[in-house]
Figure (cartoon, rainbow, N blue to C red):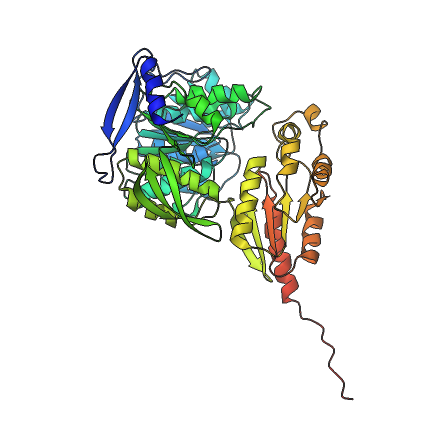
Length: 528
């Protein structure tokens, strides 16, 4: 639908249109159109989520976090500490993260016991891994403390910031990291909680002095319904987490509920090339801006050149050039992520060319086509991709960037339910690979009965049916030995999946290094 048609539809639905200048880069009078519903009110509530409509502030509150050592929980603890809360927490084992929190004044307990929970606690926060039998959780309930999930805490904290929530089936971590990195680079100093480590940010979470709080918004368990953003993105929507959601329609409806959490003066940035995302964005009270490669999108790229899979392009907002980006990370999908980020920067009032230059310096999140090392001319890369679409775009980007002689992919499926539901899509997603090695499915969150319904060999057989070369090998050590024997200079090995498959990458590099260091037996030539 073109913009004029969309405006007519909005007007027909009793929605008034407000016009505002696009902030941030001297745009010569360009305006943004804000659609404000005159019939629907934003009530700040979501089904099954914490009601955060009441006033809440962290200052002076005593907050205890069970499982404080995780990436998200440790970041939330640091934000609470900076906002004036009295923070304590526990985890099962010590770590550098816990030591850093202790140095910041957080009361950290190693091991989990009921007496760790302060008697007069205002709030007890549980990570997703905490079970009802946890002694600290039981103590909190006995004491009558208010108990919330991690995602609910983020919703409470967002009330004290300009919340930026990055949602989508794919690309959340990379885009959240990109937004956080660029906002820091241009001087806005945001706080952030991301579901991946980011070397350029010093980790997956951080506390800044600025008013932005960037959060990776996860759709599993409808946890993103607890957030209260003023700016949000929907990067894409596909079938995933089908152990939780009934079908694609239910997933779209969940994203729609998330989008409706935005206030009328908020902003939703949505992928205009994705029909499912556009369905989720229909009729929400906030302003909607689209991004994509299609002609009707508000934010579009004009591709200038491609260098090893990295794109240089002009950024267009409604046809007007506002910046130019030379991407530092490969892949057409990252152009899409960058466009979404640019829309966020514009709303935050950032100079768009300065933002574009910072985007070009961004090097990605950990386990996103991360080069683990190079030995004997063999590049070894690790990636978190665990959904068919992610696999396709990642392998395409890797082949364009590295141009390998031969590409070996070690893919560890994540969850039996996901593997079963999307088996045919998985089998078709490895066309860019020369050899696929599949260990056993990483068992998490599924029932034992689900475990019996599908195996890694089923995926191997389907890859064969699609004309690919695939091998089943459950033992990580034998996978390393096999690769060590077969790879040659110029080859690329990618370990891929959301489980512990990254261990193979590090072990392979160590084996290749040892093999390369061994002296070769050379028989001297005899005089004749």
